[in-house]
Image 1 (cartoon, helix red, strand yellow):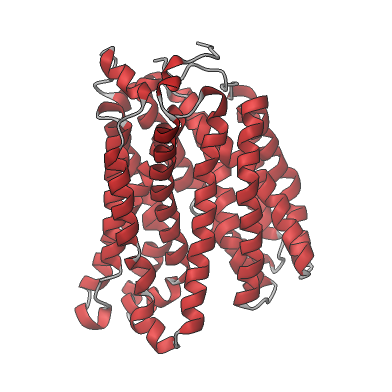
Image 2: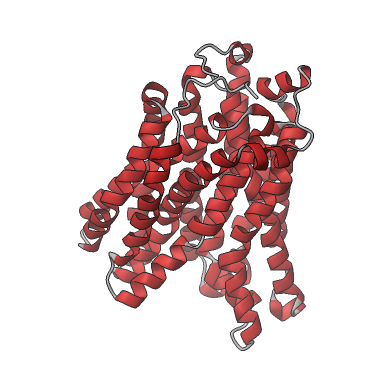
Length: 436
């Protein structure tokens, strides 16, 4: 099972690897860009599609904004994961970018409640469902495609591209939204300005689709086909013979998923609502923290290629247990330098967890069931633990009245994961990813 020399990876030219990185980066960026923009304009969208005067629609609004995308992720794993195992990693990524780009673009064209009545929120929820399905295959599908195409001694470094582009998307999406909010009057922003970021998905998705269509499949999947080892029922096989890797994936994905949602969405709201900073200052500080996190991701990848995935993932998880509360205490001072320092502490833990998450999604699972098993474990962690995280954090902060109470959820989730990882997470960085 262990091997440091995998000839399949050497068959890929540097030019093809660059195209692979671009194809994966564009799709991953688009997914998280949409997440950032939707979160930023959620209040406007709620008023336009779910009038407060209608209680049922207000309830539907909360469901659409906070739940639908996460609930649909496991369904996306059930659909796109087996496609990746049966028809190729490329096929899953093509479907993912088509669904995500199409749904996001149409969202920017939707009529509001005043124009279409009940049909408007129904269509919005349907599109959020489609986005959730697409997201359920994008992260793990991108991981399989990119890592299977990477040099064997640089799989962690290549995996850092996925974590890094997610951070970049949050930075760009937030600043695009802030720019529109600053440049347009509230009337224009509510009238048409909020649509512009969603319509940007059209050229981005077309570019991503074009690049992905031009690529071949990964050498690992081509090897499965040539040796007739493609699984007929990969999801069933993954669930019956690979339950332990799925549980391990659930554990570390819960931690890394919660960490990125805290870092990219909750922190900005925390700085404004709990600490009283204005929106522009909060965005600049949280953006600085995200940018430093982005720079730390390649370093985490390099370290994981040298020292392994297990030790770094556990180190990052223990870091969340120990440093979550201190990082919030630093931010609670209200001092700009202390806030950035707190974000750096949090981001350092997240970089270790996120980058190793990406590469472990590939190395933990046999090649024939990799897309199905990794997508299932990853998306269950996001749907059940990480997705509700920012909402739980806000509720804890509101109920206790203390700015550090939100840190406890992060620390407790990480604390629960630590013994599972210590007992079950193997070292994988020398594994033959063609096996199985």
